[in-house]
Length: 294
Image (cartoon, rainbow, N blue to C red; front, side, top):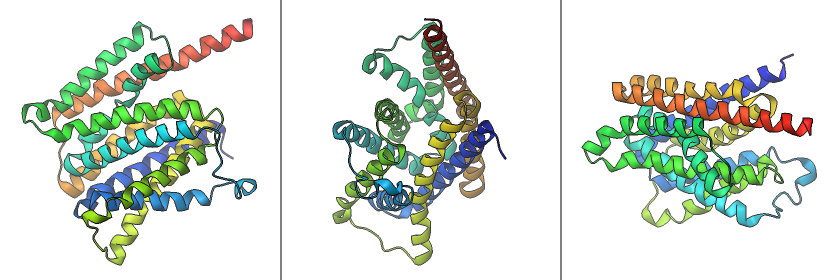
């Protein structure tokens, strides 16, 4: 039998693998309209979540007391998803993944204004280091006026607000319901892109496109399970395996070789996010000890 920390470690590893495979298929799907790819991400995600709804909630699984917050989570999530899909299709995979690691930096900034959290000198230093990393990674895009470098940053902004809303929703809403509404919103949005023209996929392509939704669904579920069973400090560093997978896939399939600037910038962003995670954990321990002593 595996311990809770080992289970959390395993779930995080599987989540990273699933997300990486989803990114791989999204990059491969460049010949299909973006709206059609969104449909497969949303529709098969919806189908997946029907298998994880508890039996006692089958009749009223859709009920929620916080529709407004679900809407905000879905809206910001859609912006993030569209931005990252565009970026994956137009930029080297390792570059996109490296910039996406900066999401906790923006979450820290948003938490100040939206959650009234106090941020100390260490986290401000982490934010500064992270922004330097982003500038280093995106410098080629700035110098060449490549607009696509802005999309991973839009993804980080959207994902940061998603993190804030999920933090608020998770106090009353089950994880599967939060994810279900998001997948449903992706599916509904994709229908509006039908007039732009969809391409009829072959059977093999249909199966691959379907995996975008399945991988996305299981990856989110496994990520939540990882945080449920294990300490965040133990499993969070595993996230950076995604960069290793991106470099390998990018090189083997598309002959993409990450530049020195991408690698240096990604190291700065990773250091920044690790500092933020460590300070979050330290702050929680201090609050907990004060509560016990009081």
